[in-house]
Length: 632
Image 1 (cartoon, helix red, strand yellow):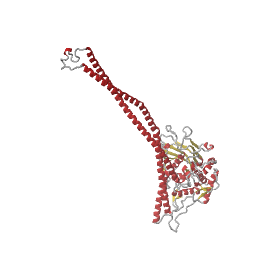
Image 2: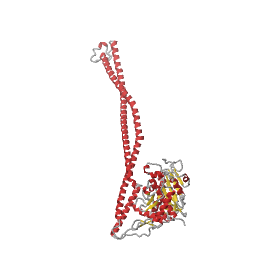
Image 3: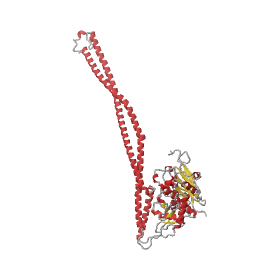
Image 4: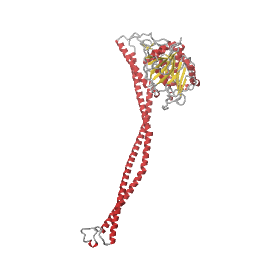
């Protein structure tokens, strides 16, 4: 009999006028590695989205223009299907066969709802569960024996482990929402035992007080779910919020100081530009005024020269009449003997006229002398402006260019960065307030959920994992860790209270980020191995994003790495990890997403993909680089 389960075959994004973005998967090991910010983690998120994840796809720039997603699936008995969904979410279209291109409109398809509904099979959750051998199962919801229909979303968090989840400081069975911990653990128990919780009988409330209490609990659960969803949108790690706020406040303070200095510098240069522009405008106005005055004074000097010439003529003519002696009067034409007789008709006195002309000439000489001094002064002033104005123009141009090309862009960038950090601080404060609200609601719910003082038992047993099964699972994980050459892997057991692994006497979640990541990977891989080896139901694939976190190069968060992480980075665990997962049977599909290069033997596999972030070498990333799109 063929083992139930599915494997992923391809993921493809399509959009009008866009190059397809696609990647293929095969049975067994698949590795996606390479540079950061090339879409590796986005692939895991998109697969989760195509398996019924209700949250929207991350809005990254490369995704703009793509409007549909295709996910190819293949069952263990060889049946092939393709799911198509809008990038905006909503219902699915199911096609028979594998389609890497969007099928034509006349190709037969079936519509599947995105929300789980146990009463019919026309939803993606029931479709997937049916091919995993888990349709119709039920899992415990609370300690009163209430159950939920198993949704594929409960399974998805056990097989798709994002980078955030893989290093989270909590059990792999917890997603920071206490109301979801019970169904999460029940799903885990179902996979290990093959037995669901359908036999539980819910103890329904009977008295008005119990009905009221039940309604209040339901309301609080809904509030917690709503706040938890919003909290997930704001932050990946709620426990780190106070530290995040401290870091953002410190960064804001530093940026504020730099911004204040830059704004002061900007204001000083703008004031300098204003002063230079004012001096330049005043200089130009004065230079124009001087030019007009020089034109008028030059014309006046020409008038003075003309007047002097006219008066010189009068002077010379009068002198000539005096030299020539008596003759006809130059004014009235009388003969010499009649000069005095026509005195009443002609009052001309040549000597007086000559004297008057000489007097006027002297006045004009004085005025022209003063005019010459004025003109020379204006010309000197004009020459000074002619020297200074070009320098002021150069200074104004330099200051303006400095402001426009250096200070202004720097200031705009600093303001934008400061605004971004301010927005981030606002989001962190909102997340802290939400977390406090959730904690308060959970506290009130816990008080309300306490059993009333009644001698009759009112709760159903928690349904812990049978000790033998828990021990067998822990041994499977221990064997996996030993295969990976994980240090101190001799003592592994499952802590029923913490619902997490104890390794060498230390709780898994209490270790450093690097060790939490690799042991979370061991938990998920061990679960797949256990279910397959025991012929228990399991989807048949797992996706691990950044399991080898301890091997990454030191970064800005290097102080988060514990001594255990640093010691682990010096072992051969990375090589042994890849060697182990590469040797697993083909009915276990494992997709590894990593930044660091895997060993040479793994890189040579056909199902090993490298994203270079280099448009001239290999594959740039998940999304192709458009020709007119600038590359980083």
